[in-house]
Length: 161
View 1: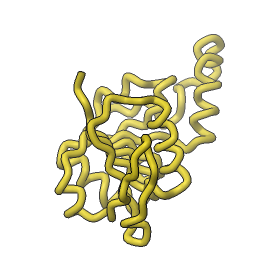
View 2 (view 1 turned 45 degrees about the vertical axis):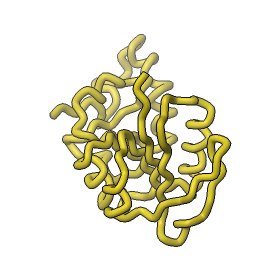
View 3 (view 1 turned 135 degrees about the vertical axis):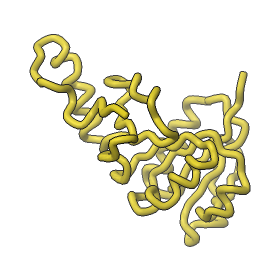
């Protein structure tokens, strides 16, 4: 089974910590986890997956020194706009939790329960809506399928290349 190198960008923030919690539960086939954050948090240690992980400062040099397959971003839109393309350019699949990429026509906006097939046309960056929108769309999708309540479900989803 292939093992992946996974980066969590914004690992010391509230959502980043939640990413770590979910990754612990899922026990995915991961070779290495790289926890990135700001210079202020760099060097701190997070106990994760039963091991201490030193937080790495998010710099281009530190990204390029590592082979990263998947990068989970939750560090804000400005950080995402600056660093997601660097990760993507070097082969990582970026899944971004900020608002930075949600309106970009060449970036799929994905809620897996609703339009998972849209990940097939990514260019190494995938966006997801905010948490309240995700919950609403998951609830509306079966209603729409049964009663056609929306002309196009959901607005802004299923943009094509």
